[in-house]
Image (tube, rainbow, N blue to C red; front, side, top):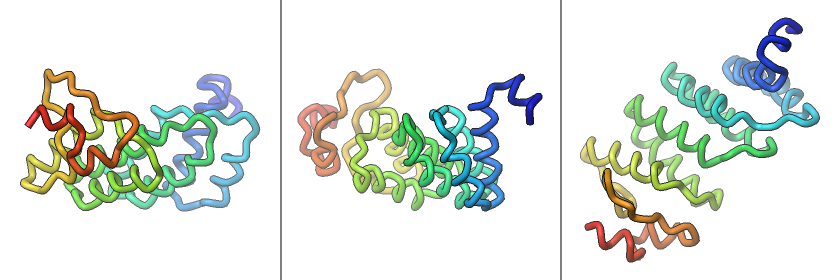
Length: 164
């Protein structure tokens, strides 16, 4: 552990160790690492692990990772949810894509435009209903409302309507 810590850095090693514990289902060990003083989030590592777990058919490990990351300072939950959505989209689990999308609203997290465009693309390409108005296609500069996610869901935002 000392050699890898010196070569990669303590935070990087702790994040990878977290992922391996999630993969094995050792949640008590995860809790010990999460209580490490000064632990800061490395979002790109968590997102990559989310996608990897789902592609390896280890969705529960990915879900546990996201759930536990809510307690880590500086974690961008939108990024993690997007990682889950991309993983579920690639594995063609569209029901889970929609479940994660609805968690944005439950957690009061504003999805980024790229997240909404990705969900819309994945669902529409597979002839499934998109639960919101498409925020734009390639090349558009439509803004996703930052302050009212509910308007987007109901299709009431003026910028979104203009793209129909």
